[in-house]
Image (cartoon, rainbow, N blue to C red):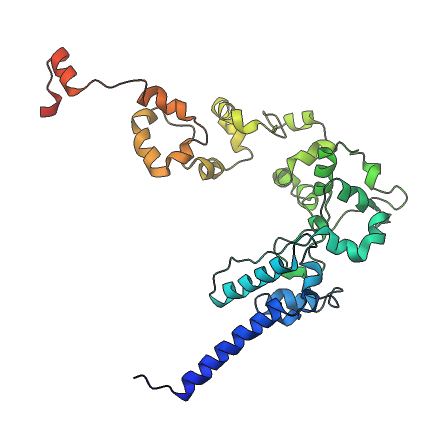
Length: 321
């Protein structure tokens, strides 16, 4: 019979009390009163940044819960997160979603206004009405540099939204004439229009270029349609075959191989080698460009003659070779 030691009793008691504590917080304590320390067990960096932010007087549940989700579901998720932490079975980096309603609870008055600040005029109401999210531009307000994939207001993100919703792209729509042209401190524009713009101008979102520049301006240097149209993937192979140097003016060779996983365009002797190559990279990679019918046209519709037929017609016994 096993001897029950004081150490085992203490360990068992600690585990039992830990489970009771988790159950107490998950099933009894109302969500708005969850202490931040319970979240900081996993989110230590985020909690430290939050404690120094303007949002420090609001606990985690104030922003990271949704009215569309039942309290029971949220509690169940919290319970699952605790279990994931205990068994170290969660994905990193940890990402959290904040719904617009959480921001609107405090900032509803500001959202209704059209605000002009630092030479930029913004209608937050219009942005939200067109499907925008507060965190598309402001996801660092509570956790600063600890935020995963931080976002900031940028001209690029504004232009993409304006294009998508058929809104004006005229400079004066957002830029105030009276306060001068304000250049944002963050965003791709500073890279694409900086001192090294000749080599870096393609590093931004090319969909935004035509808001200020005509498409013909690109053709002065590039021998292709820029920005590439939405269906470019469907026929970019033909363009690459006709003038590969034009592609390499912007793209490194690895840009092709990272997607295709094989040398592109296929070399002239590729046909007899393709079964081995298809096995190496996987059939799914082939189907990124080819249809299953492309394979079937040779491997199914074309029926190889049997050894018996070859011997009968040609007099060659392939089985002895």
